[in-house]
Image 1: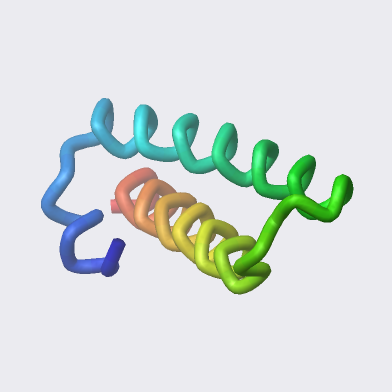
Image 2: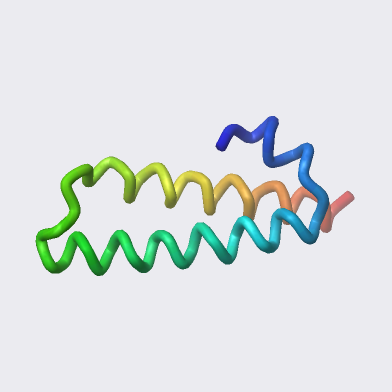
Length: 63
């Protein structure tokens, strides 16, 4: 997801998306550890999405 799409979400939706992304990251890490993950680039993409969400939440807390 892009930062623009994430900024359009409200706080509840962002929290839900953050939980989903963290669960997805856990599953991807488990697949990677067991050599079942074919596209390793997904790990970086999910990490970046989590970082974007956390950044937007921090921006909103400061405002």
